[in-house]
Structures are given as C-alpha cells and as structure tokens.
Amino acid sequence: MVMEIKAEIDPRMNRYVELALKHAEEIEADYVVIEMDTYGGAVTDAKDIVERILNFEKPVWVFINKDAASAGALISIACDSIYMAPGSNIGAATVVTADGAAAPDKYQSYMRSTMRSLAEEKGRDPRIAEGMVDESIEIDSISKAGNVITFSTNEAIQYGFCEGKMNSIEQILEVNGVEDYEITTFKLGATEKVIAFFLNPFISGILILVIVGGIWFELQTPGVGFPILAAGIALIFYFVPYYLNGLAENWEIIAFFIGIILIALEIFVIPGFGIAGILGIFFTVGSLVLVMLNNDTFDFTFVPFEKVFLAVSVTLAGMLGSVALLFIGGVRLTNTKVFSRIALTDTMSREEGYTSNFKKESMLGKKGTTYTVLRPSGKVSIEGELYDAYTRGDYIDKDKKVIVVSDEGTSLKVRVDE
Image (cartoon, rainbow, N blue to C red; front, side, top):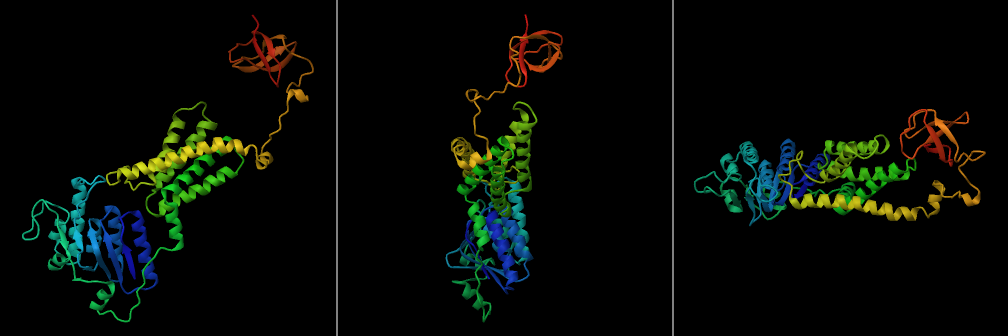
C-alpha cells in the first residue's frame, strides 16, 4: 500500500497517516511505501507519525521523491528503508518557530535526541542524524560548524542514509525481489472529505454565525426550539472535524460550554452585566479561535501569525455576521406567516376597547398610606383596602402618606403625598 506525505506535517497529515496504516492492516498489505515530498511541519505531529510507523508490524519504506526536510527527515529515518529519486534531498531538521527563527534549545535538544535514537534503532550513524538538527556539530568531511547537514541522493547513499537511487515505487519493489504484487494507493474516504470540507475557514465562519445567532435567539426567546437546534447541529459540524484532526482539545471545547453557561447566568440570574458576562464572552470567543490553531496549551511558538490572524478574523466575521442576521433577518421574520404561528402579533389597543385597567372605578388621585415598605414596589392601604403599588423608583418607608398618580395595570403607581 502506498500513502503520500506531500504536504505540511500537521494534525491533518497526522490523521491521514493514522487512517492509512489502519487501512493497510485491514487489507493485509505486505509492505507500506510512503511517497514523500515535504518541507516538514509540526514536530509533535511528526513524532506521533513516527510512533505509528515504529509500531506497525509490516515493513515500511519511504520513497523521497524530491524533499524530506525537517519533520520529513525525522519520519524518513524512522522507516525500515529509505529510497530517493535523483535530485532529492534529506536533512535540515533544525526546529524553527513560526517566523522561521531557530526555536529555543529545549526544542532542539528534543529533536536531536529523537533523531539520534531513531538512527541507532535503524542502524544509521546517530552523529550524522544529530548533525541534521544541530549546526554546531562538526563531522569530518561531512559538515562544518555553522551548517546543518542536508544530503543529496548520492551523499545519502554514501553515508548510509539511503538504500538506493530509484525512479519509481515499482523499481523499489523489483530491487527487493517483490513479485506478483498489486499496488493500492490510500485515498481519504467520503466521510473524511466531508470533514475536510468543514475545516475550510469560510465554512467555519458560517458555522460560527449559526452557533452564535442560534444561541442568542434562543436566550432571548426561550422555548422556540429551532434556533437552539440549529446552533447544536452547527456546533457538532464545527467542533467534531477539528477534534478528529487533533486541533480541538477537550479543554478548549469545555471552555466554550463554560462560556455559554456564564452568559446564561448573566442574562437570567445575575442582574446587570458584569464579570460573569465578560468571562462568558471571553471563554466562548477564545474557544472558537483556539480550536482552529495547533497550539500546545497556549504555546504558539510554532503557530504562524497568518494562521492566528485568520482564526481571529473568521471568528469575528462569524459573530458580526450573526448580529447582522439577527437585526436584518429578525425584522423580516416577524412579517412571515411562520412567525405569526409561533408568536402573538395582534395589538389590543385602547381605541378598540381593550384596557389593562380592571378596577371598577378610577383610583387616580386617591390618597392612602404605605402598608409595607415600597422599594419600589409593595402594598398600600386606601380606604381600608390593600392594593399592590409601586413608585417611580423612589424608596418610601412604611406608614407614609401617598397619592395615586396612575391606576393602569394591576398595580397602582404612587408618590409621597406632600
């Protein structure tokens, strides 16, 4: 079975290799050949790929069909045999940050150690493997201090990092005496293609629009049902693809739901808008951004600024789009027949004979005393009868004289009778 590593080593490639090796087991492939052409990528994902290759029971060969740089070199050295096409290269495995600068020594040390142990495991020179990472290592006739090692095809053969120069996978099989074979090239299935579709930043923005708009509409009009259902479906399509590809961590998803809970508490339980609401927005927006980024618990050393900017832009665009949709679409929704079926749109005006005043006679101008403290609502006593009452916001103590200034509704509006 042939699988291709011809793109950046990232969570998506990590998942591709995982699925490819599972497929190789299912079809009982006798050999796995990796056709490689990559400039590298994330060390963490490369290490996962290496572990899968080492744990695979059948031989894994790599055919470097141009470049195996950085993380690509690490993966190549983990394979049982390395073959290279004419004009190809392997090496230059120095760990770099998102801006292309050399990463701190702790990352270089980890990479040196990994390259050294893999070379020893596969019977290759561990000192040369280290020299592909550390420019300070000087090896006679191979490299001078200040340059990391990068081998051409002939150099790799000379120093034991390539078994032979090959022009095709078929030639590799022939050299190894493999006959009567069938080559199967692993391709992602329909499900994985759907998952990849939802990883598109534009689609992510639309999903965020539906998530935020649906949740906000449901919070404002509880019980409608459809908005929260749409938001739930959008959440699944948003989080699941990123989770399956190793981008969304458990804590990032949990942070989103914590944010929603805090916002709900702010709206329904805690008066005003304070710490809970601010934290809720921070957790919600932060979660939507972080799931798109291959960060290591807030470590953005290897995350390019362009990807951070894109993730933030997509999230903000989706949220602003949901606000615009609520304002524009909300007005149009109220004029539809569907809305009239789920909401009361009739107006009961005074001109048509409707009134909220249930009292048989007007209470306007009548005087009494406060039966309880009004802050600003409570009860008043007028002509021996108790009535619900409220003020314009003033605080009135018990047993104070008051006068009715409005009697519409079920409560009387009063003020102090001076």
